[in-house]
Length: 197
Image (cartoon, rainbow, N blue to C red; front, side, top):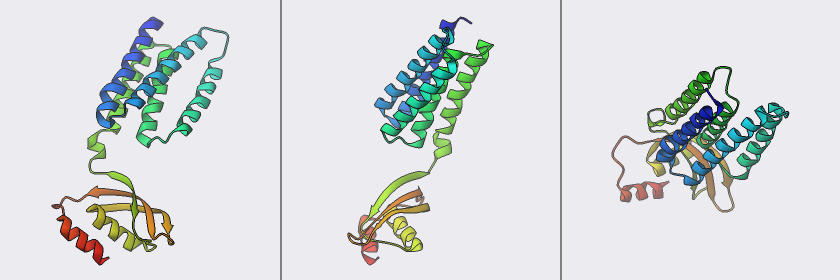
């Protein structure tokens, strides 16, 4: 398979990844641009390096440094980092290929399929993560979980207190939870229950 067809396969794969898999689920257009630009940049540089005297290792090292700088320059979620590195990997597969170009295309398809499955609603069903600021300083873990379940109307799986402010009477918590399957508590009852705590 000629190099330009492998490059077209890479561009098609990253467009599917960014526009058909990532964007409908997460709706961040700025990251769609980043994923596509990073992919095409890696593709172009690896294709240029593979046909020059420069070593591919040097190019990959430079992109490793650039990816670290990019990941440190803005806060990204873990799923966004996964998409980011998938777009890098697609660019490398398109630019470097393998001994058999069909293997490179197969790996591109496999990578997009695995990321799509891993980020599917079936796997993530019901799981939520949120940073919550409570209006009281709570140091007891059981009391913290009880309060979070009441506030979120959910079953708390994990709660990590990030900050307990005894002066301003506040607790910042990273909480993992599943929304309650029972009917939501009426707002008046929930306010009364919170006031009782």
